[in-house]
Image 1: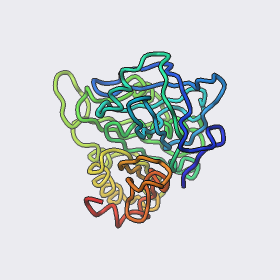
Image 2: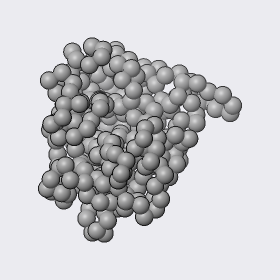
Image 3: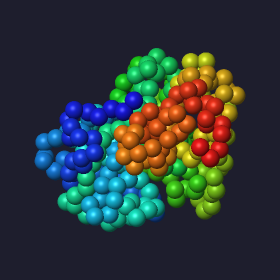
Image 4: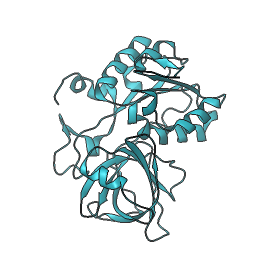
Length: 283
């Protein structure tokens, strides 16, 4: 169900102006944009897993997941890849530049529902960005959960997101972090192989674990299989779907996924609720 919080425009189609506070290049093709409300006082409340529509004036609008800390609503953070006209224009923005923001939209990760359980997070590529708010929320109440495990796969070492943050997380004694790359060269000494190869040896109890998964669809398909082999119940697996979202409120139909609309019924779905559709290609 879509959630449009009260602290933003009453019209979900009306962008709210935000100012660029910082733009950081994360990898050769990904960057993180930090935004603050142009009026200087408005805060932006959101739940982990939700997304915004970001409008580069005169260029266009794109949906981008929120990658910041839900407990720090004074700064709105998005990480994305520069692959299209809008995101390439976005990467050229300078401090003080303006963008329009509509949102937040969509469903969220089951952070509260997972209280008392082991939590395993499986991320592929830039799929780590929409899962980062869930990690922040889990770590903020770390004592309320069992084991918390992050399994992250990237194409190459150069594609790894949030390197410094991953190192900080890895240094914690209450968070298990495993990183792998599909292809490695040079001085890489870590795991090599797809992220699903980490699942059989990951330290979590499948009988009670809640899994949150985001990445390329092919990666999520095989992740579902491996999680089920470990014994994780389908009703305890959640994944974030991606489709061509335009209006973000279920009007235009561009993101239709069977009877559901990704923008308002997702992007986060419980796996057993979409299992049949997910098994079909070209939907």
